Image 1: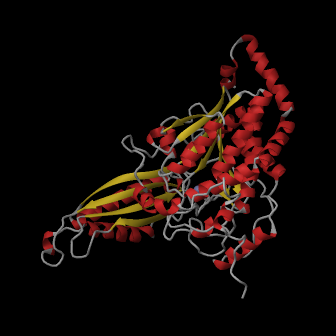
Image 2 (image 1 turned 60 degrees about the horizontal axis):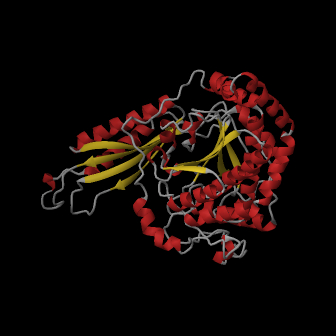
Image 3 (image 1 turned 120 degrees about the vertical axis):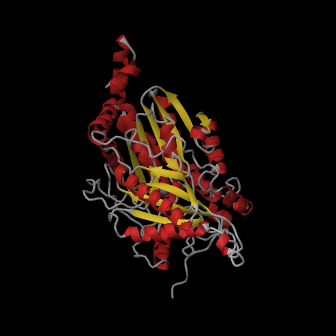
Length: 529
Ligand SMILES: [Zn+2]
């Protein structure tokens, strides 16, 4: 209860806010209904945000247009914006209101390399060949959170509801590049509840370790340094940095058999030298080491470092490394998840049209996935999986170990897709994403109201955080003091494609939707044989 007394002040002030809360919490169902109505009124706004950010297609750390656009909207609507947080140019926070509780929204901004895709088309059809695209659907999250925040602001003003709303962007989530730095910079120190949200094909939330398909990770680049020489004329004078990379990878492949089954590790060679007749003096490889918890991730990372040092010895080269990203496996708050689940059930799945289902089924068929269209039912809140097997990662994990948090999955994409690919971009500027984002915004607004109006619920969420979640496990960052966010990453890739992508930026002044601007008839599917 400490937090609440601190903000409530002294003496009679202790009673007044209590009275106010009691009154407001009896109003809660009506306020939630107002929130739903207001979100519905903003449907066009939400749709245009989804489409606009889809058209920007910006890679991690280069979310320049996206950030300018979103913060512009927020500033115009009376939010205070601070930019350049945690040493990251595209990181910012937008704030409205004052006092406790402080409710923070967060969602990602960045897209996927080579995932460029014309929306509403059920086969591979890039907008710009080789360009980045929203092949995960991060273009929709800000539409969800900003819509919810605008509605909350209106309700808070109209009903004199105390509290603060903050909106954060998930910068460079695809490279797990920002949120451990946010936590290190203390951005969540005064925050009571974090409502994160992420695109998915289900409408669901979870608590604890959820479905057990999350891993934490460190992402690290190894730079080998050798000695250049004529590869035919004087190879004995050279030392190949690429040999170092190849030996490290070979070593890792042998070691892989003797690691826990829960690990996932993968690498790409980011520099393999320049041309074959020059012994490569520089080469580099980028590893993701994933495991289920901090000690196992750390030990995997250490094995990687040993492997790199040994490979350098074998090839008579040297090696150094740079941590690119890190993430704790997320752990979500049961109290918030239970409140959120009720709101999900109240809102219900969007009503999919025949066109939506046709697109979904045609795409599933096209990529040889199970053909079952879009989900029509809501999943119940499940007990966390007892034997997690691991899977993908999300750097919101670090936030979830710093403050009570949940992750709302809203239904804006098609089931059974491979993830991180053009296929996952197909629905992301179509009515599927628009309707799913509107549904998500309703739940975000309603869940925020739950915590703005019921201080007891905030206390319960913190009890769970302190006495269950972090009773035995304490957050420790993977970041070393000298680690800095890799803000230069993706700069060249983005600069290369920017002139072509710019031609396709969505213009809502001229076109009702991005589909209309691109002249795509919805849905576009291959003729049935
Ligand atoms: Zn994501």
